[in-house]
Length: 550
Image 1 (cartoon, rainbow, N blue to C red):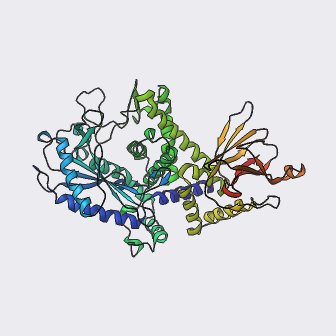
Image 2 (image 1 turned 90 degrees about the vertical axis):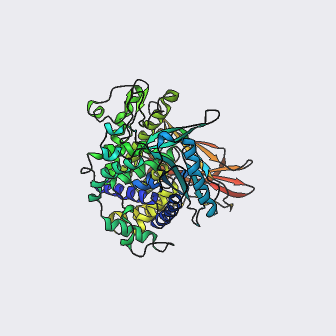
Image 3 (image 1 turned 180 degrees about the horizontal axis):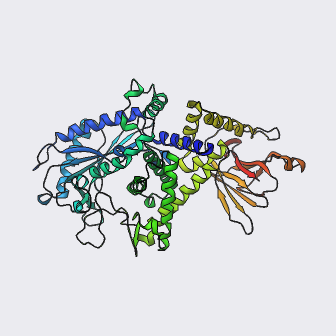
C-alpha cells in the first residue's frame, strides 16, 4: 500500500467507526433486548411448548449495524428480534401466531409506558424515545415457528439448514388482508456469515480497536470502566467494515428514492460470498471494499442481458435467466423451476417495472466505484471531504475527519490536519470582499454546477469541480428554501498568476439572479459563492463552490 492508499484506509475505517453503534448505546440496546427477551419467554402462547426461543437477527448479530438515515437525517439504531414459538406449523395459523406474539409485545409496551406497537407486514415494531443526543432505538419482533419441512437441507450443510423457520407474512393487497407462511433461516444465516468473517479477525488489532472506542466515548453514561471490558461483539473485520460503508453509501444515494434502494440482505450476502475465498488476500477495509465493488461492477452487463465473463459467471453470484433474476439466500436457497420451492430469492422483484431495481443496484455500484476513485485521487483534505460528504453525509464526513485528526498521532494524520489548515487558508485572500449584512442564518442555499464544452463530457456537481480544464462554460444555479421575495448576490474569487497578470483576481460581491454563467479562463484555485438576503439580513450562504482549473 502506498501512502495515499494507507490514508484512504484510515479514513474509511474512521467512517465505519462513526457509523457503528457506540459502545454505551450497544450496552443499552443489549439491556433492552434482554428485558424484551425475558418478557417474551414468560409469555402465553396457546398450544406451544414453553418457553419460546428468543434471539437476535440482522445487522446487530452480523456486526454490520449502522445508524440509519430517515428523511435525510441520522436517526436511531434498528434491532431485530426473533420470537420462535414452539408450535407445529401444520397445526397452526400464521394470523393466530402473529396475534399471540403481538399480545405479548403490546403487554411489554404497556408495562414500560411505551407507544402502541405497530403491526407491520411480518413483525411487530416498538419505538424507544431518543436520548438527549437524539439517538433512539427501533425494535422489530418477528413471530415464527420451526420449519421442519424445509427442503434446504438437501442443498446446504445440515448445521445451517436445521434452524429453518416459518415466518408470518401478510398480503395487504388482498381484501381482506391474507396471512401465509414464508420460509426463512436467520439463525443459519448468522452462523454462515460469522464463519466467513472469522479469518478476518486475524487481520485486526483487537486491543487497538477497543482502545480507540474507549478513548472516543469514555465519559458517556452507562459506559465501560476499562477498554478491555468492551465486548468482542464490537470488534469489526475488514468485511464487516466494508459492508457498513456500502450500506451507508446506499442510504445517502437513495435518500429520495427508498423504494428502489438495494436491500441490506443483498449487500451483505454478495459481499460475504465475494470475501469468502479471499479473506487472506484483503487485510484492510480499503482492499476488501475495492475488490467487492469491482466484482459487483463486472455483473452490470446483465442489465443489458449480455453474457458475463467466464470466471465471473462461475461465481454464480448474481444470475439472470431471461427476465428473471436470482440471488439465493445461501442458507435457504431458491431453486428456480421448482413449483414447490419455498426458498428465498433476494432478487425476486428485480424483473418488475422493466428491471428498475436491478438497474438501481448497478447504478449504485457505479456511484460507489466512482466515489472510491475520487477519494483515492484526492490531493488534499478539502477534496476528500467533499466526496465523503456526498457519499456518506455531512455529519459522518465531518466527524470522521475531525476524529482522525484529533486522535491519531502518526505522520499521515498530521499531514491530514495540515492539509486541512492549508485548504482553509487558501480562501483567506486579501481581495475577497467580506459580507456587510446583518447575519441571521435561518435557511439554506446550495449551488448546483454544470460544466459544458464541445466534444467533452458534461460535468455536474454540487460540491465543486476539483480538476477541470480551460474553455469550459460554467452554469451555476442557486437552490434555496428561502420564501420569496429575496435578493440573490454572488461572489467570484480568482487566484493564481494568470488571473493576476490579466487583472482578473476579482472578489467583489454583486447582485444577480438565481443563475450565474462563467467560463474557465485561468489556471488556479478559484471559487464562487452565493448569498441570499431577505429584509436586509443575510439568511443563507452557500459556502465556497471550488473550481480548480488545471
